[in-house]
Image 1 (spheres, rainbow, N blue to C red):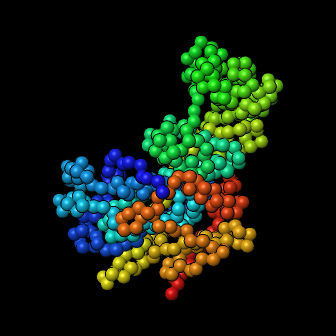
Image 2 (image 1 turned 90 degrees about the vertical axis):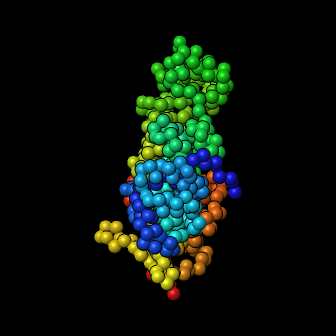
Image 3 (image 1 turned 135 degrees about the vertical axis):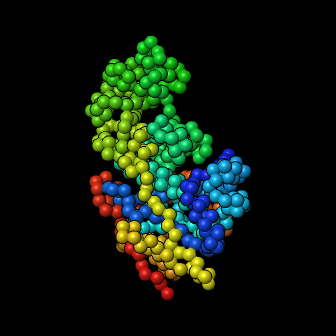
Length: 439
């Protein structure tokens, strides 16, 4: 277990106006204290995706702990007249006292998977909706993109370097999610400090342009960082830069980086040149608007690592995981939980609190995602339960080291059918089936 990163500010205003107006109306009607169950799930995966990835769970647990309406938050709500005085007084005493379970971080999910289940009174649970969705929709989207990229990269490491292409705090979250899904390092120092993600970096084109010539720039970097550093060789002329790099650093030069042009052709040319110069151990790192498709296209090239930025932090075409937070059960007048669900034509839900299992075929690969209401069937050698306890009566119990989520994702992806890592369009890797309630 690891300690939660410190929270400098309340997270209570990271929510939507209507969460509080619903609360006020429910307090007045007396329904606010009804026991309720909310579930987070995706109705469908983004187009072309074969699986989703749960990420952001650790960040969410920290955010729930910090979800308190402190004096600055209450003053802001009062000034804006968002809610009445009675509701402000209630919010001043708010602390989530319910329970949360969900798919463990790093786990794969599919349409209909109840990846998070929040249980408590309506008042305390409904307030978490926006916070839950903003964290999970972002982090799960980045994680799914990262998983596809590391799968395409095979055993070659990927470096996260998208901080300059997104919001400054989203950059930290993206680096964390990418690490869960196999990225080796990040350029983001805050992700290293907060979450222990390994950081890396050398120099940009500006460093080369600062100096009178390329040789002077390379000499300055090697003198500072040693011959094992990575030299950026595409500021001017690549063959000339490679030759100069080896002359300056020697044949023990750690790596060269290519950031533009025809990366496939250049990788072969640079590899031949390095080998001819005796730098047979010098690696080639490629960057420059890479996504999973570009990485896959470089599979046959003599590339040793990939640096990925924009496509990763924007979800590689799917900036949100499409998750929703829906009420699926509430207490009736006698206190018994009854299933409820939206019935609109295009967004009909499935009523009732769900359990979830992954079931396996004789080949030990996942065959179907099964959800159901009522008593969960027993687990055997061909199935496993997916929901784990995260919060118990307001206390976080599911915090874990980030490396555990990273290892879990590797194992979860390995148990999916081979079609899961195909980049072509297709259906989810396994179907989701809902079973009727068991007695």
